[in-house]
Image (cartoon, rainbow, N blue to C red; front, top):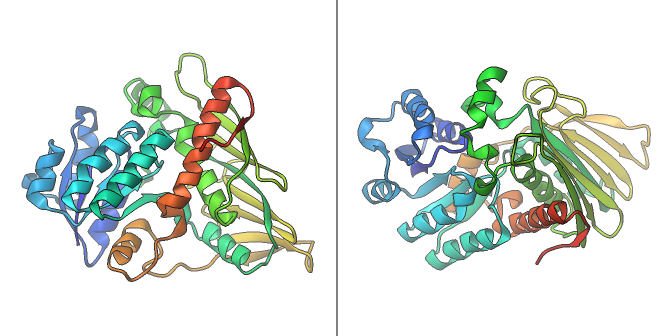
Length: 358
């Protein structure tokens, strides 16, 4: 499958192109970026995957016209998601957008509409959706192990988006602070802030755990450090009718969870009518309580099998009609998450509880 990558604003482009590079039936036919600030990331990708100079573009349209990809990976600043989906869709390429979904519900609907208009598949990739603990937890929920889900509690983040590059390459604190001033992650108009960056993870997977259920109302509070224009910490509470669920985002965790789990641990605690599950990022077991075993017990996580281990192999298989789209990547599930994100942003600005935005 011919695959192109457009925009290196998000460091995950390097991770996704690595998946393409390592896939036995896929090839990188072109990469494009129009932001000079991303030159270092582009250069590293060219070196890592031996991409010839004639496949490297500064103009997105020229890349699409000359390479004619079957799939396009988009990793722009969040504020440009809708713009680039509308640019790509008329070329007939299926589109994978790296999380979050969009800067607003209106833009999310633009993206859905563009894909439908041009008959292309659209998916939103949330890397947490491929973590074995969370996939295992959903399997147990579907099997009725903890009854009906009534609460989802989520805490996640990292030391900050400037503290790592693609492949989780670490960046020192001094260099990270220098990068803040020029990064879209710290620009409000571009879609910066920990709430937009990480809340979508929690509420989209939360919607998956809830079986597609939406909350009735949302309350959110953010913390914006002095000298910044975006938050580095947020707490959002959602009312799902049988209890309250909490979703907390944090740039500035004590450690990065892929190296050492911070406290609180990054991941989910899921409460059901007949049990509970503790499902933490990167861990090899989950902890379960049931009516039969209220003392709790650990279960090894499921071993994920191809083509359902990661975004690229899965989306290729989905495009070819081999598998249904993994639900957390489905724009309809993601739209529920976007409704919650939009409502949370409005709630934090207005400092009050709001009904879920339609």
